[in-house]
Length: 132
Image 1: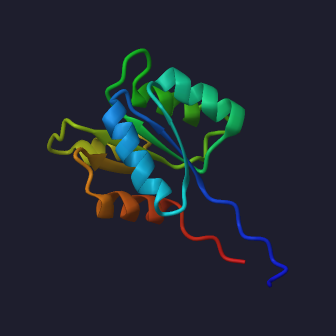
Image 2 (image 1 turned 180 degrees about the vertical axis):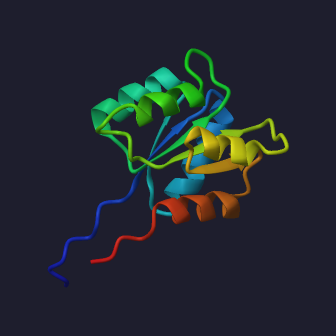
């Protein structure tokens, strides 16, 4: 038996107003060892972030109350949260959408429906495996 403690799972916050999308993202990421918290709007996302933090945030661009871009601006304006990587997700794929999201300050961008391989590649890129 090893005396080294197993590293804590990386924590991902998912904010999407579509309950099916939240469940799919949560199941896909949890299956690969991530600890996932899922909320249904941007205001809830900020509450969770300010209370518990996260290693990565996945934000739907179209949500009621506070959309993904609004949450991103709050995150980037907060000195404790500002360096958390963020991924924009959207069902409305437009030419140049990825670049617009990156220019706005997101670290990644995915369009729905999100293939699991694309999700895991994007998350893995932004949350590289910790080494001892």
